[in-house]
Length: 423
Image (tube, rainbow, N blue to C red):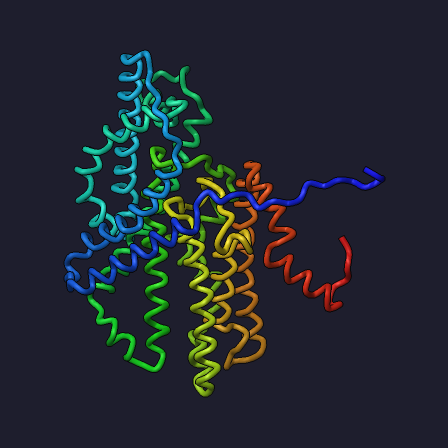
């Protein structure tokens, strides 16, 4: 070794989802949306259109996942035992559906805030109940260890508590809590965006003002994000390897995540963190058309990066869960490209550092937005803590620390003498 320590070179781990998967789904989604506009589907067909768009995301993404699944079938020598296990799984899954329906029926927030979600999902319930036995049978057949969380839930409903694997059951319950909370939020927003898409003359919207391109792009980017995100929550399917590997079960992770969504965020943002004064970037830059165009374009670029991060998940998008480690696309440059892009866009949109009232008011609003940024920083750190239990993510973090965007900027500053050199 000649007195020198040998170090293993850092390696970027392979991504759980390829960029081609997300791009194929994105192309399919855009083409499908264009076809819906060409055939002039009426706004009354919003539910049908939304299901078609979800299918446009699901088919290419799940197709790509299928191509990566090892070709093996698990045949049990104990067919009666296997039939019993499938029956118990079906009991666990139907019991989960029933508990979810009861929660949606009983809790006011779901009854009043997300009515559009129910108009979307209720027509699909007969198909869901029909497909569930086929799905459970097919999944059980290919699983290496078929006694999963669904099986444990069935054992609980049968009262066979001594046979329950508690960690598996806990992950199963936590996974369904995540799905149950976020599905209404995502698809209620997606419903309204699709309704807007069907009812809006896009050409007229584009030409409505000098900055119609900004308004149209802004609305469509967020519509794409919630449709893709909603599809991700629907497609937690072990048969396609898009299932939940683990769920972050620490209290602070759940708190800092859930406060960012309805019904919690409207209360917090209006009562405690209202950093907007009603004067946005278009107002401040009205007399500078070239700067205004560049400013609006920069906001859209940031939101494009935000959506790119969502699309990179393929069929695996969801909060508070580990469904595979992403290392490509925008994740090649940052561990949290979506949070970074979204938080920067808020500074450019609301411009809290400017105020017609006083410099003190501008400082106050800026401090409030910094507090919002701090919430997302905390959220990012809890996600890292959860995913770091996976050696792949630990390797990815080490690679980003040396090759990510922040590391590149640090190296540039050091080369120009702006930062002291050192390890």
